[in-house]
Structures are given as structure tokens and as C-alpha cells.
View 1 (cartoon, rainbow, N blue to C red):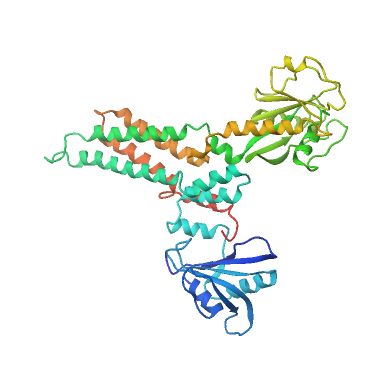
View 2: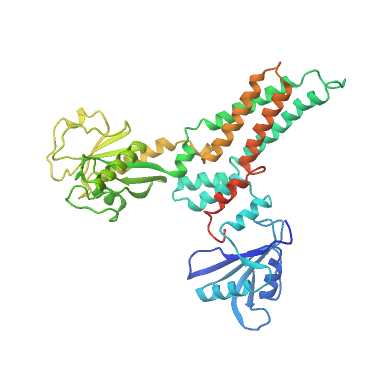
Length: 446
């Protein structure tokens, strides 16, 4: 923490107008900012009601609660303050304008408060990513997973692994550097390799999660596909409970993929409405069909919608993970023996009346719960985490391949590479190339 950096400020609460507008201030001039507006600095961590005035003026800007958090025991690790104002646009604008006139103070960039917390050692990089995911969480399962990362589910484990690796490296290097000393055993490679083997087993176990953490973070992808005029867009609208897609009796109405985000009993899902799959000479519709096939093949589950009046056989849907959705049952008589002949899971619905749709949604929620069962113990929630752990595991495997009679210098180097990958994971070494990518998506004031 240095005293030559700017002091930053921003509105950190929601959109205005609101009941309360919270302005955060962080940096070496934070105390000066509070004293300039409030004429005094309150006791640390004690909410104090004061009148805020522009410096050099008796004009009252607002009556607000002020909190003072001296560094390094603050969220950012710097001197920090919060002004809890009345949430009117004019009130907040006046205070922000006044802060901007104080020397060495400027508005914060997106994610700059969190970035300073990372730079000052208050958060590691996995916790920063957990905070970003917590802000973006749309379902209960996503919230739980993100909060776990924020509180160190992966970061603390990785830091422990790295510390054990450092101790293992010290064993090997002691054998290299002091092999001629009488009080150093002839070989320290065997206990070092034993420690490396334990670490690799733990890291491998952490990776063996079926990528459920990443899937939960991104959500289950469910594609609605099928022939034209089967009622795909009507089904999307029925599930979304709004007119998300255009519905018409003309084939080829849907050209591009339409996405709707769902909460399936706490589990996230993205529902895709795709173009009717058929042969066509229209180049625009053909592109829509191509995209429909591509998204359906990549989806976790396909709801293959067919017209219950016209189609009585099991449709040839793309991919194995598909359910047959027989739509328009309000227009069709109940067929006998049809369900018994199905080789895939089948549902009979009416997107127009809603008949059978609740049963379909219950089945989708149960399907999502089955996929995401056990995510409470998942460590890996991003591809970056997986790459770092896979790199560490591969380096440990190469070290173990040397064996007890291997070259100690090679083993030491592989162990250092494994420690480097774990360091990159938590942000202690060589992460400048990923920082901008991570913080650019944060909101201003966080």
C-alpha cells in the first residue's frame, strides 16, 4: 500500500433514485475527504450521523451516516470510508461532484476497489472471481457456489498445496546443495516424491468433478429443436411466461437462436429456441437451420418438439440427450400404446393451453438437480482453475516419473513448475495477463 496513488470514489449501491445511496472512498486521501465534507472523522467502524458540506462552505449537501475504516483493516486494505446518503439523484451527484474537486481524488474504474483488495493481499484471485460470480449469480445454487469461492473453497486449498510443495522442493534442494554434509541424509528424494505423490492424488481428486462447477456457473443449456411449425417458439414463450419469440403459422419464422434464462428450482439453465430444421433453398433460413443444428448438438439436453397431430413416430433428433415433446395435444386425440413404444423420454403437452408444461418443468428441474448434485464440494468453477491445476498435476507426474533413482535437479524443476501453476491460480505470481480480463466485467463501485 503506497501513499502516492489516487484516492478513488464511486456510488456502490443500486440505481437511483433509491432509499439510500452509498458512496465508497478508498485511498490515502480517504480521511481527508471525510474531514473535508463532515468537518471531522468519526470513530473507526462506528456509524455516525453528520451533516455533509462542501469544503469552504456552510451549504449542507445532505445529512448522512459516515463510516470510517482505517487501513490495513478494511476491505481494500487502504484507508476507506462510506457515506450513506439519501438516495436522490441530485444528492448523490452533489456529493460526487464535491469529492471530484478534492486534489488526488478521482472516480473509480470498474472493479477498482476489488483490484486494490487483491493487490493489498485482502483477497486472492480465486476469491476475486468468486466475488464476480456472486454478483452475477441468478440462482440459489450459483450463489452458494460463488460464496464458497469467495470464502476460499479453492484458494485456501491451493495455498496449502503450494506451501507443501515449497517444503517438498526444499527437501530435494537440500539433498542437492548439501550432499557432502554429514548431517544430511544420502537421499531426500524418496520422502520428497512421497509428498509429491500425495499432492498429485489430492489435485487429481479435485479435478475429477465432471466439470460440474463450470457447468453450474454457466448454466445447463437446453435447446428446443424440431421441424417447422411444431410449436417450439410457443413452448419457449410458455416457459418464459412472456413473448420472447415471435409466433406465426408460417414455416421459417424463427431464423436466429433466441435465449431465455431460467431458474429450475435453484439451478440455472439457458433455454434456446432454434429455427425449424428442414431442407430449404432460402439462404437466410438455411443459416438459421445450420445454427439450430449446431446449438442443438452442443446443448446438454434437446427438447425435440413434434406436432402430436401430424407426427406419430419418434423423431430423429440430433444427439443422444434428447426428450421427445409431443405438442398440440389440445388438437389431437390420445393415441393408444404410443408411450410404451418410445425409446426416449417423452412428454405430451399443449404450449397453447399449458397442459403438461408443469410436468415438463418438474422433470427439467429434477434433471438439473441430478447433474449438479454434489456441487457443494466442487473446487473448480472456471476453466482457468482447471488449466492451472492440470498443469500442476502434469508437472508432479513428470517429477514422479523420475523415480527414487532419478535426477534430483529435474525433480526439483518439475516441482517448481507445479508450485508456479498453483501460484498463478491464487494470483501470487505472474498473473498480469489475466487481471484486466477479470476486472473489466466488474461494476463500478465494486
